[in-house]
Image 1 (cartoon, helix red, strand yellow):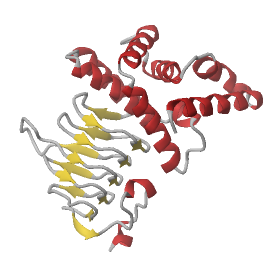
Image 2 (tube, helix red, strand yellow):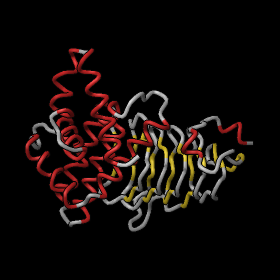
Image 3 (cartoon, rainbow, N blue to C red):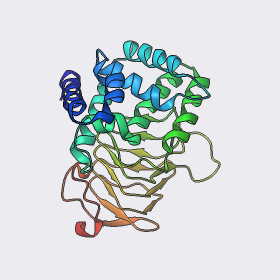
Image 4 (tube, rainbow, N blue to C red):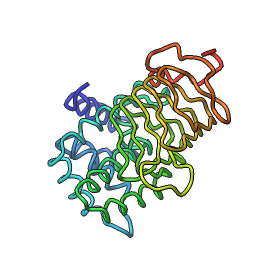
Length: 261
């Protein structure tokens, strides 16, 4: 789905909901129905979540609006992330839900803004956003990290992604995943995750290692070596235990790695 299709779906879902749920009217009018575009819907929703004693909502809305106008690829990534969430998360029943309520989706979009600020050498506001995201959403992503599109961040709690980590397209994260270093080393020190990878709950990927396309990492695995494409790794330390049945395990979200033997 493209941005206009997703915007249309969100608006239609909101219009139906305000007719039958009185408690939804204020939020949906403010964040969806009174907004002219997906960019405005996303910007005001993130601003409502992130505003507080550090930075006020008006400043955040202006910042997001300026970034979305200057970098339209942010909206493309957000639309693909939203679509991925609807397709892969069985708890998600509409486009409206992750936009308004899912901290994984919201935290990822806020990170994307921080990453742009970092790339513009505006490191202070980038780190300020990182700090707010960490406190509000329970996920800590360094603004220098590089993350592709079509990402599902399910639950989001305790996600940690380090400064030199890279993540490809169409990757699925369960809660508690770490893309971290192995100590106090400097330089390029964090994992490089390929396309279509599924990262199970509390998987710990440590060091400058490479996770191949279509790999599957089991829940609780501690991965300290490279993982070949289209293989399943599990255990402490993680070893190959099989191969996923699909080319893109991130899509079907099958988390029982014992079936891959």
